[in-house]
Image (cartoon, rainbow, N blue to C red; front, side, top):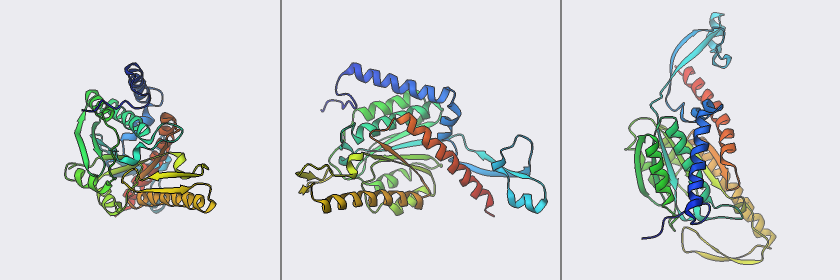
Length: 312
């Protein structure tokens, strides 16, 4: 049996304990601190239904004004929504071979572990049910969603016992696995580098029933070849190997172009599924990045509810 994989700082138990305490402190401050409302909103908005149209009252958010009714009746009206607070959150974490990649900073797996741990603790402190699916070419382990901090720590412990395997990524398989298990609308957060193909249609079908966030983990070193002459490249999720001359300008340009095209394909897949796309770099400060995500998500949720109220 292999030793537990300790991310971030090697195998020093004391250092891991410090990291765990830091993650707990960050999550608790995020929810209970001055910005608690913004962080709690991460886990809201998945189940939002239009309830009524009523006259505008002083103090109402002007963004909720229903302009069609206001123009027709010559009196300001606002839209009122009911939000489903019994929310289920599922973290789908990619542990395929490509997640082991690391440049001059922490690896993509380290970054994914931190991201998943922080989100699990945030959901627990927000009193939401949270589950975990670990996948590569198929779902390897699954913890059903439950409420409570103990559940979140079970998930963190399970993540810390894992390491990326030399297996391909299959987002199609994880969507098919979760679809029959999640009978009610849930917030599903996919944490991956999305080095996969032919998953777009399955993701779109899945996102029709659930609120989906794609967290794409990237390493800046992936977008540009280092100028180091000849070196051997190996497929992290297969056995293929090739020699590459990184000083060749045509190869360098092709490499950068391919990386940009791939990023655009992931963005288009998110748009087609009407899913939020967040990008976290191996060099990012996660809490600062999360604050940026929340501003984008709140804006997106408001537009989504506005579209829902306009439907006949």
